[in-house]
Length: 245
Image (cartoon, rainbow, N blue to C red; front, top):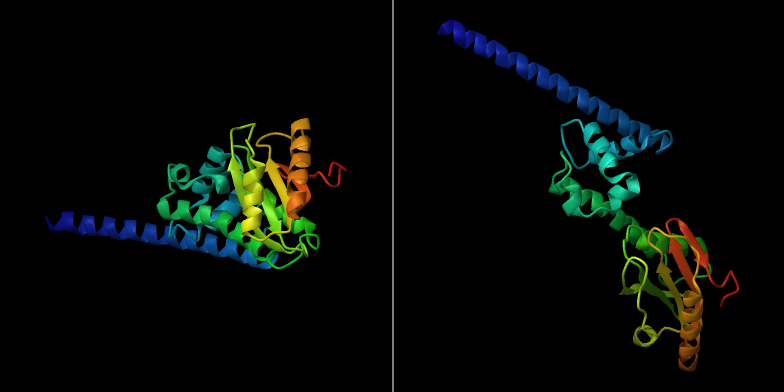
């Protein structure tokens, strides 16, 4: 019996030593990933390494490289991962609820970051930020949506809101509801926008006609339609730049 106990204790010590080595190895890899980012940002990182780095802050003490690769295999791209809901993320092996919530938080924080620089500033002073804000707001939506950016008399940003949501290729828009919201916010200018999920930035005759109807409906209320943006993926089309407004 004494011999068995000795053998068991020796085996346990070896297992613990191996585990300690593994933890040390994982810890060293995490440290190197973070040091690379601190020195050079994400330059030179593969997509799975970006996800791996993020996961080191949500999953402790284990090798997250296989988990990062599983996420990319499941959702295709970094955007696909960050657009995925908690319920789908948590089904991936190695991703618990804590890590799933953390990943969805990243996009929400970025959206808040983009929006935080808009209030009180003219929408025409930072058109690139407005477009980035709208791309991020509509990215990952599987259904078409329609919304508006409301501004004051000096075209300073008041609010951005999605007002209507529809199907994959159609949204029913009620100009009366748009004008009602503008009056509630005491807005004097509106930039309307809608997305084409999985489509192109090719405006339809109906899109152009709707823009004209909204412009005419807002005029008696002293509310000006400043532009209409059509978002498809990373592309944003301006109706004003095309001469349609």
